[in-house]
Image 1: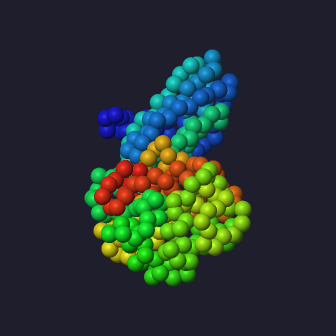
Image 2: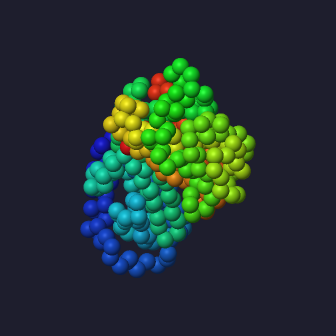
Image 3: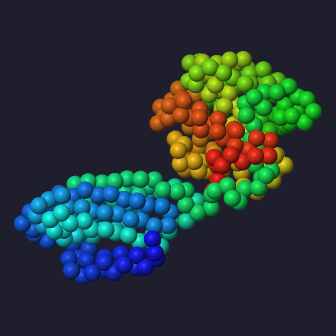
Amino acid sequence: MMRSQGKLWLVMLVALTVLIGVGTVKPVAAYNVVTEVSMEADCEMVSAVVHNLSNFFGFEEVELVVDGNVMLHTTLRLDPGQSFVFSGYWADYGIGLDDGQAHNVILRTDDDSVEMVIGPCGGGGDVDIEPGDFRTQTQGGWGTRARGNNPGVYRDAHFASCFPNGLTIGSAAGYSALFTTSAAVERFLPAGGQAGSFVMNYQDPTNTSAGVLAGQATALTLSVNFDLCDPNFGASDTNLAALIVVDENSACYGMSVQQVLGETNTVLAGLPSSFSASQINDCASKINENFVDGQQNNGFLGLP
């Protein structure tokens, strides 16, 4: 869309304001119209349609809500079957979305509404991530016996200093598993079986009721905490925990790595979650696979 479209929307709204007022009492009409709405939006622009389904004219209030805040409230006069199109740049209306976050957008009338999530907007993407900036390992990698320069060598050398109280997955509010040594982690990983939740507390287990999810959580916890503990784990000044899931097809789209890990622990603990064990396992698995050995980037994560 051309930038002039955004200015056109602004002119249209100003005209509406002059004619019927924004946020004032709706003018009296012979009939109440019935409307439906549709919307397309990205981090730069929004295009929306309000359609009068009725066979008579009337007036309808319209609101555009971004992250819970009403950014536009106006009243439209709609003829029978008329569609009114809003189209323009967010910036033309003083709406700044370039903050590295995902945003919830709602277009609504008295009769209908449409809701979508856009972003993360600004920053992000894998174009600014260079090889070696970040490192992850699969649960198989973190479960290797130390040899040469493999992940097991790093795990043995840094576990005690980076996990002085051991590594815990799950939550004290529910069930959890504690790994007290690097050797205990090696014996546990990789974990298999159907993703699920803990049904008891564990210490240095070799398997759990949570199946593969416990293994993915352990591997992700190792990568996140080693990155926080050791400045040489990854070259970037940004923490692995702060990276954002940028895969729009993922159930974790828009979440940070730390948020994914937190939700993984919630599911493991058997606490209420909006994610199934399978969904959160897929997110954790793809994070663990994204920067293996610091030599690859699968594009699942972007900068905040």
